[in-house]
Length: 233
Length: 245
Image (cartoon, rainbow over all chains, first blue to last red; front, side, top):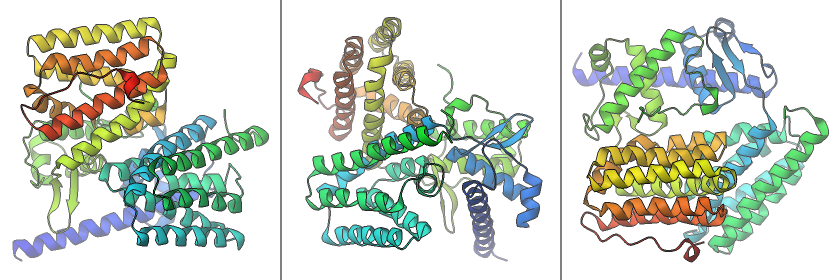
């Protein structure tokens, strides 16, 4: 076998291993979101490996990645645990999204093409329709896609990486489907203010609209938390 | 100056060791060794990192190297290319400008919060830090000055008492930035560079959140300007924070 072929084969093996790890990561993350693992519960590598029919190494690698998202933490000699969500986590998450996405919206407003605007309008429309139809999973997908599109249009590798590190997908699940109990239709409709501000191509207005979107959600979430007391203070 | 942890993990965890401590410690060691090698330019941008060779040189398993590389990828130091494997990412001027702008965003917010939280003692030690930077600048000890520079910015970020902000800030990779500063700062009039930090301290002392925010933003706008001017460019004096809000 020549060097090139050998390299291609190895790359293929690497790609397969990555795909498998991504799959395992998704499965574990979903299990946490769906409440199959409770906050504070230990995640046992061997059991997860057996249930998913993968190697323990793959599970371990997936757990390392999930730990970087901040939803699990490992303790010496004790294993990996689901981190309990605190109201501080919620506040910090919305504050950083306000900061990062406000910055992104400002950049987008300055260079928004008509096609990009139509794309955002389309996503808003789908988000509202999914929420109205009671398809919460679809609504969450479109919600996250809307925000990630704004970040993508803003350009920049680091911005995208920081945004992903805040883990908007996970948090939108937590906000709409899980612990925060926000009303999907209300959340969906609120995005229209961001679209309007972007349409005006006014950078200050776009930043302000995005920031208040996040900060208002933060306040609503905090109020909910106080009522239900589900989440640790 | 201690070595910078290049961790994307939540900094509040405090514990670097995980379920299988030896393994975790190893990955961290490998990650730090690779980071040092990249920052010291022992790898060229675009150069491929051969897992097996690194493993042999460091005397660790290929798995440990692979795990370390994944962490480095998450902070943007390396990237995986189809048919090429893991390569050193080439930083473009646009990348560096983006790093400065995002640091301005994060540290500006941190400074706002720090202005409300720092005690007079904290402000005094920041002031002392800038004094030290001044002496190092006069002695042209650039590497040491760059290290103190990172300590200064880290102190402000930590004073903000915001776990997620700190985690994101670490992702902007201050260690790499320190190296860039070390290389880039040499041609600038150092007193001017140091004075930019004094403006931040003054705003913090006055507990003026908006002025502290503005001083940080202005500080990074200067960095971007330096970059665009290239070597030998004229650096401007810091404008009063009240001019920028």
